[in-house]
Each structure stands twice: as structure tokens, then as C-alpha cells.
Length: 586
Image (cartoon, one colour):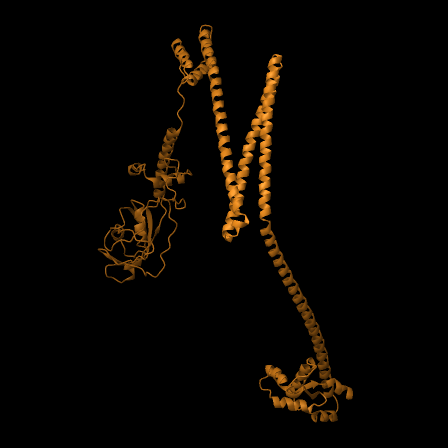
């Protein structure tokens, strides 16, 4: 371990945080807070290392830090015996491995075959002081620097193309690849530094704990006649009594009492006993203060309740119809909310005051019981006088209770009046709400009727769809029968073929048209115009002509027939399918 590593200043916060993080200890500041809250333990390095910055061409100095958003433009670096050309700025940055802790060594690959150790020193001494170079025969080397931040400067040269002199020979050129390297010396120095920082941190924590530890009580002096006389004087003083009693207790527990010192201890115990009377008097004085404070609190609370009553009365008067109609809706809403809040707070305070009075009544009843037990031992005259006093107190309490009951009844009556005055407004609101509900009910009935009607229409459409599907199935069966008949006719004699050749259907295309038209008209039992039929056929074949279709249908009189429908201007020619009637005739 170097002497330079041991002289690291204790005030370096990043070093403290790193050391304590590596030892699993949370670094604390003077007030117990972390020294460096933004320390990244995943790095395992000192966070105080300066950022990577490009070097000026031809110089070993570092310019001011560049913002991360600004792209760095690398330039050509000229050395004495070689030249470094920058990489393409559009290419991604070269990949690097994870940085080892305390890394001071770099791996440099891509060196030219003719590159010497002197050229390597010439290129990389700009980054900082070089401690050692280990060169290999396979165009790479390891360079160890004096400080960790120099490694970041060396990584800046990764990707540069090196050329020795002005030669273009392959042996005199190469592309540098600089990366972090693991070295046992770096790791050992880093671990030594961490252990040293951890020792300093433990020492600092120990000093901090000792500073923050509460002071221990002063030691109790040993017993002697002189100390006994001092303690006896302190026991008589009210300000020093607690300290002297603690000393007396410690002496007794140590076993300082013997035949020679018993009288002294007895006198000290006697003076301690004399303080009981003082403590009792202090307690009585504090109780009087507490009762006076209770009385003041009760009076203040009753005054607050009176003001609450006045405020609530203002809200109730504002809620009457004479004034209520002149306020806007927002103002009415605010007034009603304020009134509710004031009534809730008033009720809470009223309950609190009634609870205080009940406690006083209970205390007075306890006092009565105690007085009754004491009067049994007194004379009959004392009993009579106390009984009369108790009767007067009971009467006064009854009068107070009656007064409270009357106040409660008056409050209830006032609330009932305000509710009655608000009744007309409430009746109007109820009427409006009833009208709105009736309108909503009528609207719901209309919606239900429309729903039922549409449901019935859907059912009808479903029935029609089922009928159409059945008809299509029948037509398919008939087409199958027709195909079978054609197949059988091919096997029949020559005269039948002659009769077929003489039929009105001249080609297979016309037969297909007849089948399609017949299925279409079968689905339309009330007939269809020739334009409607042709528009359907045009979807299948655009070359179909309306006149050809009409001629074909007129030739097949037993399959299709034309009827006139409508009256006057709505007169229309419609074609119908009559194939089933033709079968019956045949």
C-alpha cells in the first residue's frame, strides 16, 4: 500500500460513501443522514471521477466538460512518429466491458505490427502518467496509469486508426481498441483503500455516537461525616431535595448504615419525611388551580354556545320564505350547508358542556355520601344542619335541571316552527319531483311499446327467412332431380336426343340462366320486373343483355309467364315462375 493512498483526506464524501457501501454499511453524515444519497453501488467505483472529455488535438490537456446532449466531434491527432485518424462519427460507440473496481489498467488492441513500446508511450502519455506497459507479440498491450480518471481519457482513443509516419503498409497501420482490463494490483490497491476508509468511517461513527450519547450521571461520593452533613443541609432545601434523596438512597443501598452512622441516617430520613407535608400542600394548590381552570373553561364554553345559538338563529331566519326567495340557488345551498355545520358544532359543544355538568353532579353526589358517613360520628345538631344544607343543594340542582329541560323544549319548538315555515317550499319541490317522475314513467312506457313492436317485427323476419331457406332447399332438390334426368337422357335412344335438340333452350349457358331466374322468381312469389331480374343477373355476369333474357323467358311459356299489375300510372309488367303448373299439365 502506497504512502499516497494513506494520505487520503477524511473529508472526501465520495470516498466515505464508496468505502461504507462496499462493506455493507450505510454511510451517515453528522446528523445521521447519508453523506452521498446519489451514490450508485452498482458501479463499485468512486463517483468523484471526472467525466470522460475529449482531448485537444496534439495536446495533453482536457477542455471544460461538454453537455451530454451535444455530439462530440473527434479530430485528427498528430504525434511525432504517428498520426491518429478519428472514426466515423455516424458509427455507434465501441463496446466496453464492465468497469472493474479501482481500475487503472487498460487493454489496447489493434496496434500496428511495426508499433514499438516507444510509439505506445508517445500516444498514451497524453492521457496521464504511465506506470507500466506490458506489450505482447500479437499486436496488443496492457497499460497501467497512475490514477483512475486517466483510464477514461485513454478510452476516448478507442476506434482511432493509427498510421506510423506516412506509410500505408498494413504493418504500419491499425485500428485501436481500448477497453477496461482487470489487474490484481489495481484490485489490491482498491481493497486497501476501502479498508482504510472503512476504519476511518468506524472511528468517525464511534466519535459521533460518543458525542451524541447523553451524559452519564455524576458519581455518588462515598459516605463520610462531612458529606453526611452536606446532604442533610441539601435535604432541607427544596431546590436540591431530589439530588440529596438520590444520594441518600445510594448510601443506604451500598450498606453504609451501621451503629455509628444510624443516628445520622435517621435524621436525614426524618428531614425527607418532613417534605411530605410540603408535597401535599403543593398538590392542594394545583387542584385549586385545576378547578379554577375548569370553571373558566366552562364559562368560556357557555359563552361560545350562546354565540353558536345566535349564529344558528341567523341561518334559520335567513331560511324563512321572506328572505329565502331573494337568494340565488348557489347562495341558498351555501346557507343550508353553513347552517348544518353550525348545528353540528353547537351540538358537540353542548354535549361537552352537559358532560362536564354531569361529572360535577356525580362529584357532588360522592361528596354527599362521604358527608353522610361522617355525620354518623357527629352530634345530632350537626346532622340536622348538614341535612338542611344538602336539601338546599338538591333544590338548586333540581332548579338547574328544570331550566335545562325548558331550554331544550324551547329549542325543539323553534326547530319545529322553522320546519313548518319551510313546508310550502318543500311541498312545491315535492310536486315538481312527482311531475318529473310521471313524465319519466310515460317515457318508459313508450320505450317498452316500441321495444315490443320491434321484437314482433324481428320474429316475422325470422319466420320469412325460415320459409325462404325451405324453398331454397326444395329448389336444390329439384335441380338435383333435373341433373339426374339429363344424365339418364344421355343414355337413352336417338329420338329423345333429337327432341332435346329441338327444345327452346339452345345452350348450356341458357340452361344455367333459366335455373338462376327460376330460383330468383321462386323466392319472389308475387313476381318481379325484367329490370329487377337483370340487375340481379348483372351481379353474376356483366355481359348479360336484358333483351336476350326477355326472349329466353318468352320462349319458355310453361316455365315463366308475364302478368300486368297495377292501375293507371303504376301499371307494371311482372314475370312469375309457373314451372310447377307446367309439370302438372305435362
